[in-house]
Amino acid sequence: MADRAVAFAVLCRECEAAGYVGAAQPPDVCPACGSKNIRSHPELFTLTIAHIDCDAFYASIEKRDNPSLAQKPVIVGGGDRGVVAAACYIARQFGVRSAMPAWQALKKCPDAVVIKPRMAHYVKIGKQVRDMMVSLTPLVQPLSIDEAFLDLSGTQKLHKSSPAEALMRLQKRIFTEVGITVSIGLGGNKSLAKLASDRDKPNGFFVVGANDAAAWLAPQPVSVLYGVGKATIARLNGAGYFTCADLAGADSRALVPVLGSQAARIVAMAQGLDTRPVIAERAAKSVSNETTFSKDIADYKELEAALEQLCIKLAKRLKAEKLAGDTVTLKLKRADHQIVTRRRRLGHPIDKAHMLFEIGQILLLPETKKGNFYRLLGIGVYNLGEANSDSLFDLGGSLNDKRNRLEQAVDLLEGKLGDGIIKSGRQFARRRPESDDDMLC
Image (cartoon, rainbow, N blue to C red; front, side, top):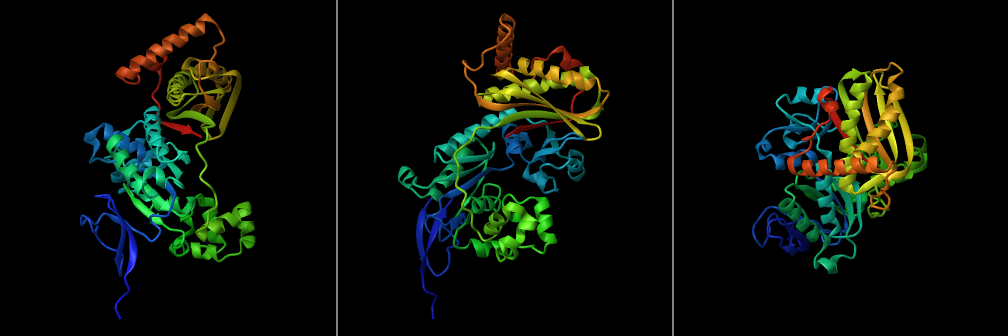
C-alpha cells in the first residue's frame, strides 16, 4: 500500500518561499527554486518563541572590520594569564573555547591572531542588532549583548507572515546591514528555543516543536538543558541521571536533595516543558571592566595607571549605552587568588572617566599600603539608570566643568581618530596588562 500524502510546512532560506507541500516524506529541496537550504517542521508556522544568538560575536566583528583575518583563526582576549573572550569558528576547530585560559588556547592553536577586546565597539554593534530584534516584537529579553529571547505572538498581522518567515528575513537583514551572522532557534518555549539555536551554527535556523520535544530530548545528556551548570551535572550523574529521559521519568520530589528548589523546573525542562514567559528588556544593574596583569603588581603608581585606563574604557561604555550609576566598586585579586572588593556610594550618578578615576584612587590607595601583590584589578559602576543632563550634575564647581569639557573633547577626537590616540603620562609609564574583561549584568 502506498504511503499516504500529508502536508509538510516548508520554508526556503534562499528564495523565501513558504507554504505547505503535499508528499509522503518531508521534501529535500524547495519546490519553488530547487534549493536544498530549506527548513521543514510540522509546527514551523505556528511556533512563536525564538532565541537569537550572534555567532562568535566579538571575533566576527573583528573579521568584519579587518577582512584580511577572514581565513585566519582569531582569538579575542588573551595574554598569558588572561582568558579567551571569544574564538572564531576556525580557532574552535583546534579546540579553542570561550573562557579557556589564553596560554592553553595558544598551545592548541599557536597560529591564532590574538586581539584585545574593544568592548565599547561590541556594545554599540550589539545595540544595533538589538534594535533590529525590537523591530519584530517589543517582547525581547536579552541574555547578553549578543543574544536574546523573542516572543512573536500576535505579530503575524503586522509582518504579514508567520514568525518563522519574519525571523528568516531578520537574519538576512542583520547579515546585510551589520555584516555578521546570527543563529536562530525556534521552539515551543524558551528552553527549547535556546537549545535549538545551539544546534545549527553558524548562520543556523533550527526548530524544536512542542509536540516532539520530549522525544527529541530523551536520548540527549542532561548537560544540554538550559541553565544546568557543571556542578549540577556532576551531582545528577553521581545520582545516576545521565540523559534527559532519566530525568524526565524521575519524581521531582526525590531529586530535591540533588537539585534543591530547582528540582521540579529542571525535570520539567527534561520533559520539554518550560512555562517561563519572555520578559521585555530589563535595565542592566552594573557595568564593569577588569584587567589581569602579566606579572603581579604591588606598586601603587603602576596600579593607578592601570586603573586610569580601565576608568576611561568603562566611561566610554557607559556613554555608549547612555547609562550612569551612583555606586563605584573596586575589585582586586591578590597573588593567592583571594578577591578584595571596596565600594563607595555617591550622592549622584556619574558616567565620566575622571570621576570614576578619582573614586577609584580613593579606594585603591589603602589597599596598596598593605604590602600585597595583585594579579587583577577591576572597576565597576552599580545602581545604573538612564543618563540625562538633570541626573548628571557635578559637585566641585568649575574644576569639574573644565574636566567634563576636556573629556568630551577627547571623546570627540578619539571618535574620529580611534581609541587611545591621546594618553596621559601615567599610560606611557605603565606596564601593559595581558587581558581585559568586560561585564554588563
